[in-house]
Image 1: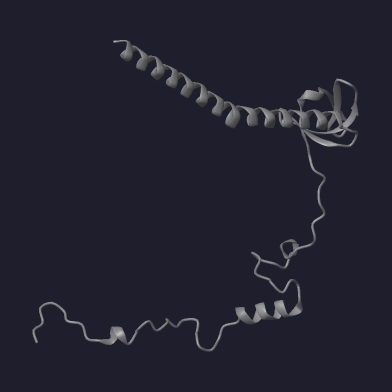
Image 2 (image 1 turned 45 degrees about the horizontal axis):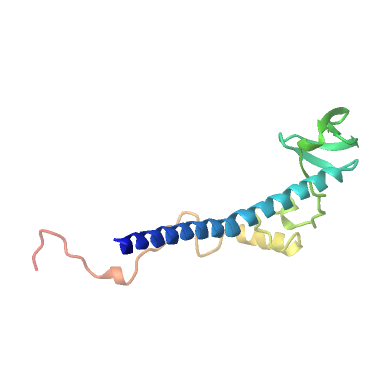
Length: 164
């Protein structure tokens, strides 16, 4: 009887160690990296909010776009539209908008392009080629129907009711 009681004690100790090992694995694989990422993101937000300067274009957590006019330790004054300012808490700033990048002129900006078809991009040959494509050709007259018969379809077909 003592032997049976000893086996159940080691069995419960093994299951307890297994549960502790699973908890440690979850802690080191999931919880610690997640906590580290959160701390890094919070530090970046604090740095962004402390480095706000006049002229920065920002978005608030409520989705309001504005330009920073002035700052103090706790708040930021934003110009929402010309001549309209509002004071916000620094913690209400979600992000700073990136500076707009100058994009080169592309064929999509050209008035002569229709649906991106002008790949010659404004050259004289593009206009003359387009006029030549629009002109009717001798092969196809305006009222003619295209010939759709194939040699494969030229074999006689048997209709019902006829005998050989």
